[in-house]
Length: 196
Image (cartoon, rainbow, N blue to C red; front, side):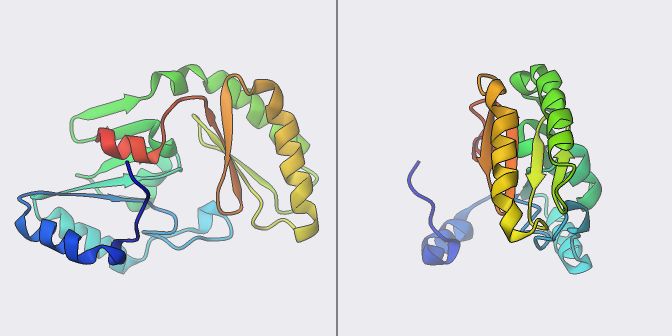
């Protein structure tokens, strides 16, 4: 695959493909796409107009829609609340759609390790105001959006220290003021999208 290009930089090519396509597969993220980024994950809500637009697209049986999120499968399904879609949670480690449900085998096997890391991180970060450790079953997120600027380096060091002994089983990635702890699977949202 080549490098990513912003949609509107290549819009003429995309529009030409769309005008001749018999079907359309639309893959969307939840946070930052369907809902604005919020200070806490539980505050990110999809607007009624976005919900109505998705519902309108679902009425067209030539369009298949997949919501691919870093959130747990159950969380993203609950937040979107529409049937007939494909949902991918935990960065694509768990997928569900009409007639299928799939959990990446390595993610399933890694659940006890992820749970142990969660327990250790929750304890290590409990004294830092604004730090939030989110248990998503197959992965974890450490949110530091609400942590004071001077304490963010401490959060990063503590996450590194707790996760280091488990690096043969997990990987740690960073996002928008969040650190993700995931199984050491060669899998992500992009690969899940291509698989779908």
